[in-house]
Length: 324
Image (cartoon, rainbow, N blue to C red; front, side, top):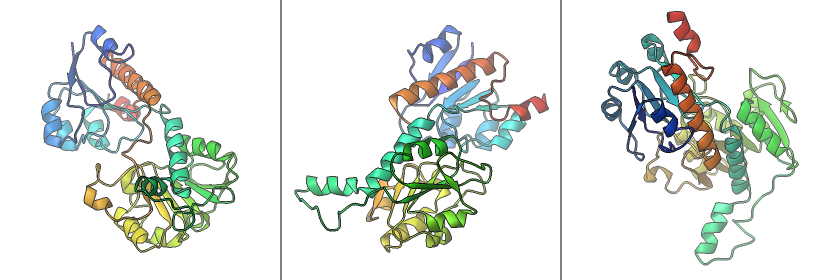
């Protein structure tokens, strides 16, 4: 019997593809409180003695990993694993798995919903009507999508799914991705800077790595149209939040939609008085359906690694094989 730490709030202890599978395999479930942000010290305490962890964004720093000598796999629910120190995981022989492709369509749906809400000014109209006003022509007059240019930064699985959804809206889609040459229904631009200057809407679909940290900074914002809308459903630190909020307050950018933030959750004071900002609580990849798919995939990865196999969902499998 092995102990499995579970902090992913979507985990179903009684689910046929999740909790029941682990229990039937003879494992013990260690369920963390579902709400709240865990500190490294709290994580070390809660996951002590566990061979596996099914998690979302818990901070598996080098110090945490060194303090958990029994840990064999961190099953990250989602596709990003920037909350795990990969170099230390490689050194200690800890597998890191993700759930690729399980929520790409969900994120694409969410991206389109954010774009439409910003262009049509749905949040502002909702607040106005609920406040007893009936404003149709004036500051709350919305725009429309047909004729706009949407620039996709990143043309992976999610970027492609967003492009498919945009096909019926009468927009011009362009993209920039150094690793992708062609995207159906979209034009590849020569540079990131060209995409910024051409686009009415810029949508980010990149992982958080050293090269994408603060990819959208004050300089990038200055290249964008003053009426442009920025959409981020990737990772919070891809955008310099301070520079973005200053641009919105000063009217140098038309609007922004943030599903992710540099610090999550963001403090209420951080968002106060920022105009034309649509926010969500890192919900891009979340739906009833995607939760079931992702949790089942993470569970399968745990069972395979604990049985001595190395599934394709393990992102550092080559490093681990090389160390054997």
